[in-house]
Image (cartoon, rainbow, N blue to C red; front, side):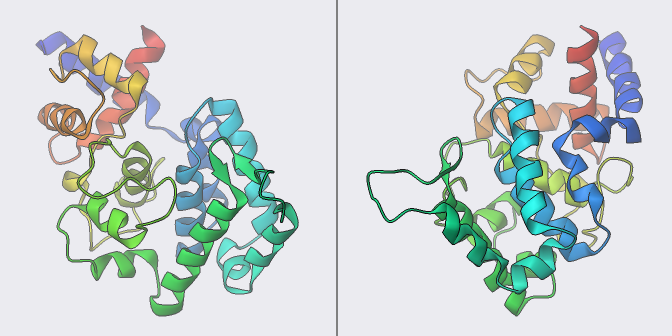
Length: 247
């Protein structure tokens, strides 16, 4: 990467890492809440459904948050999960579709796992601290293993949605990202949320030599961005967004 591109990425990161970014992004949903547990639950469920076209993601996330109401944590712990039963069917030939490849049964399983976690731990951050893996994404994979939509440990997936959730929780400037996780994960440990589109931009910039949008590619791109944004490589997520918009 030449010096001119490096400086331009820094300018774009500054331009797009602003409060105005929030209103058109899925991160808008956890920004509705103040209590840590509400933010965690809203953020994790929103990240879980964040694939496909953005308008569809925002529409489905809005539907889900209307169900959860003023406090996702209170909804979860007071058996709000039971409301999903009305969407399910006893007919095995009918799929109880919630969003794309997810069913209401998948959503129920994820919410049950979240409730089990909060019955034991004060927060999702506290739960993560008990998982022995050193890599944050592997900790999440272990905590939510067996849930549809959670990539398996040691798989080749770039784990984009888990990486995005961690970015929201961990980055410390508290502009778009919340920075409410202070102890378990540091910003320097984050991985760029890599989907096909971000991968193509990164290829164009020469940030990776990998042939697919894999975990190895995500690590390569993160290492390259760390040279531009030392100790905070996921600030580069905003820079790549800016590169794409301005291009």
